[in-house]
Length: 126
Image (cartoon, rainbow, N blue to C red; front, side, top):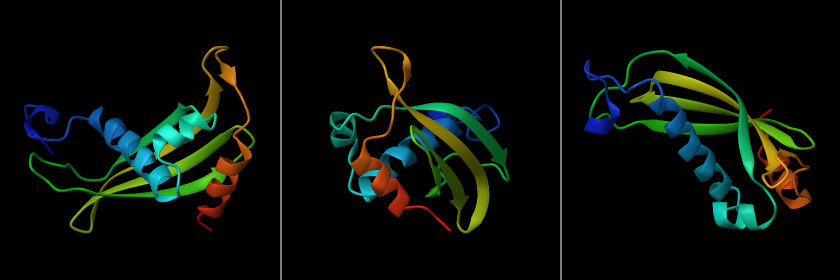
């Protein structure tokens, strides 16, 4: 963690966990063959509709965090991921996220493109 990301107590500020989770989602898609520019070009614009954060232990300035993403479910226009944040094997936080694919020009949901839904199904954790 960098200095500007921590509060006066030296803890990673609570809202920053969503930033960590957002970067993790982007890297998760890259790991399943869909770097973000390709994802958007294919017609996917994931927007968070639900976020549940559970804090386990604080992260501190200069900590190196390990972040693991698992796909929990895939729907017609949505998917859910779980983000586990840890430091040296100790749980720091869990973030449960639900995304909906949106058509930004119409401000409404739209189905996930078939190729992306297939990639997400292939990444489902059992």
